[in-house]
Amino acid sequence: MTVTSAPASFLTAYDEVLATAWPAGTTHSRITTPYGTTHVNSCGPADAPPLVLLPGGGATSTVWSAQVAHLGRTHRVHAVDLIGDPGRSVAGERPLRTARDLTSWLDGVLDGLGADHAALGGHSYGAWIALRYALHAPHRVRELVLVDPTQCFAGFRPGYLLHALPMLLRPGARRTRAFLEWETGGAALDPAWLRLREAATAFPSARPVTGPRPTPEALRGLEVPTLVLLAGRGRAHDPARVAAAANRLLPRVTTATLPDATHHTLPLHAPSAGELNRRIEEFLG
Image (cartoon, rainbow, N blue to C red; front, top):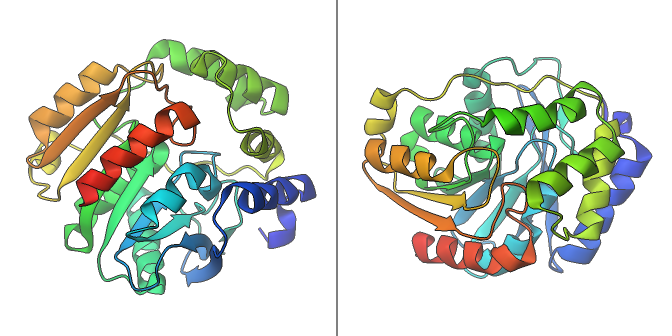
């Protein structure tokens, strides 16, 4: 895939979110890895500790707009477009096929950022990647932030998958909007980002890398300080079950539930973003 493979409507919507919702002074970089070129949007003091953020599937790095200005006061925040997912990253000749490939790709991203170690965060699918990476290279992860993580501690609710199926089988703006309205209870999402999310349905499709949940033995051995933030009204999974499993398995974990959040209002929806930012800021210290 080349840069020009991205639809013009998608690129226009992407740039609109950056222009309207991201802080002045945001920089953009392209990092070459064995799996292609990774696009990163960054803000915050250049000499501050690095914080790397991974989005959920289809959301793009721009979904962290409500976090970057706040967390960028104390950290150099790097929001990453996933290779093979909608965004400005470009897949290379070597495909991402396995979880091991994902961790190798993220090794290359951190190397390109000059970050020997960093705080690492992710939402949804991005949280699954972040957790996998922490298990792969715990010495490079200073703190781990998992925002309503999927397939990490519990499976999806069948009803969530059933409602998502039409959108997955035949992606389109109307089906994407209907699914988000169902999961969020009709919450008013940022209009510019919603236009981008709908434009992403025309993006050249690639099969996401998936895999099983980490084993209990692997999780019990993870000594990285971890924050798990859950959506109290989310429909993707049972937040109480996820919290219980995380508390039981991770030796250095803090869990909290945002009572009014849903899986897809996180992380950018204004009514939940302030509390999300506060908890992440306190955790990172």
